[in-house]
Amino acid sequence: MYGMHKTTVYLNDEEVQALRQLAAATGRSQADLIREAIRHAAAQAPARRFRSLGKGRGPGGTVRRWQPAGLYAKLFSDSATDSDYDSHPDANPGRR
Image (cartoon, rainbow, N blue to C red; front, top):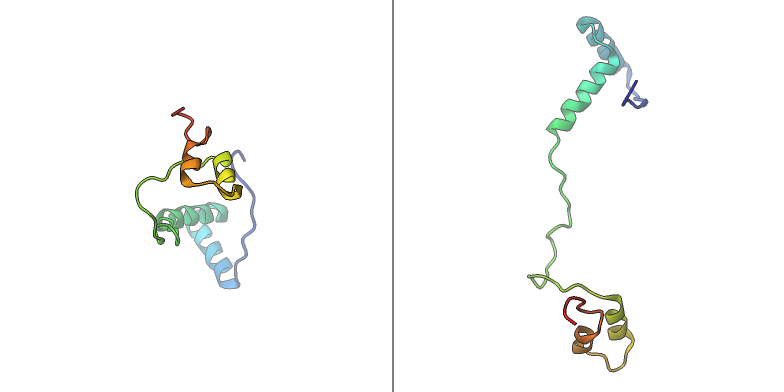
């Protein structure tokens, strides 16, 4: 069975009987019927929605990339300002 994984599905008595009858009536295996039902359900599933995406407020526009050294200096230096963060050698690697 190339590309197949074995799994266990728990069905109640009514579902087992319906699956057996459908397999007998169609000449298909129970496993094939289950795989078809999964493919059908997956095709009908709505796109995944992220509950938090786009819910917050931000400054808009792009945000500059943070650098660990500049952030450390800003957080732990008594005299650090935003301009110190921007002028740190690692803050803007492309603009030295």
